[in-house]
Length: 427
View 1 (cartoon, rainbow, N blue to C red):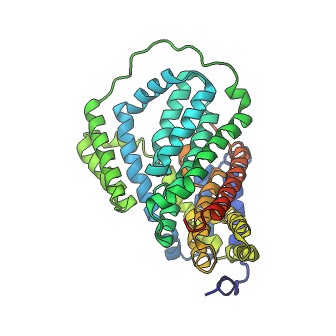
View 2 (cartoon, rainbow, N blue to C red):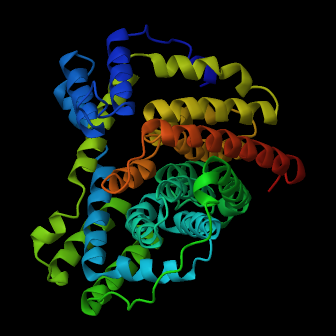
View 3 (tube, helix red, strand yellow):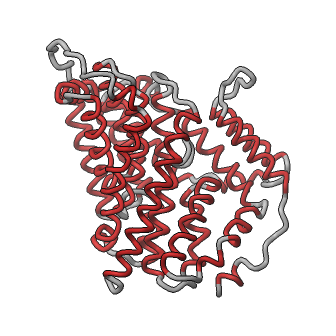
């Protein structure tokens, strides 16, 4: 089936779901301003209900729209992370990191590359869940503004996850669909991630110059390490090791996460109420609601129309193909999220020439698009929702940085993949 045939018969627009999506998007962007008392979760929930009431989705269709794999994955990891918190591990790490840092820029660089490389192999969402409390604890101890470092964690986790099939769900989907090996995928996209992380440091320094150049880190008094529950920490370490081993063995991400979450509840011997208090239930509700809103938008026909607008570029040379595909993915990934956008594009990619590099562009663009706005990726939302209790980062504070990071790193990916196609066409 050709690309033109696949997208040739576009349905007419249904403006009600488009209107509901726009209103929901605006309410999320301007959460809790003086004229609105809704936060992100409440706005998304109301948007989801509106989609059903307007007839864009039936109630059973709304249930099916929710990606339960994502919800279950997050819940399992949150339970494990909660036990790490109770053990005192994050406070201990914060003390060690704050002792190592000699300047604010050095702390930023260390965070960017550490979180970026770990995200490539242990899933960006997982790193964001684990690192956010560490970042908040370190910035609090060093008495530096948390905003640059919170934004750095989110953007770096997305950029770093580009390089590996285990970095994020859409990469795993593409790796399976295109038949990439782990090392083959890594060889192509590791340069994109490494140079992207370096550019991320430069962009963040430019945007947060005043915060990062306000002077050296203040001398901190020598303090004893906070008490550690070593028995609980050992159990958490065993549980985390089990998660990583099972993921490497290609067991289901959500099944492993929720199973190990149940295991640590049984063996951790911590009062369940204390663990429940550390699970971000509002984040889970936000994601469930957002899945419904996105599915409602897909019924409008707008998504298919946007894909069709990029079709002419898909049949040009390699540079035109990669540029057009990346541009389309930047738009769609921010409308329907990156995994649904990849699913929409799979039939199209199979009909194109240079499929090998087109798949790689699909992986890089869908992932890097996640840095555009606070809710362009799960990783951003995890970081900002967890950090919200300590530091307020508005939609526009993140987006003004995110758009630049997204455009620069996506352009870098197109250039590097085009060069690889010229230098190593059969690789």
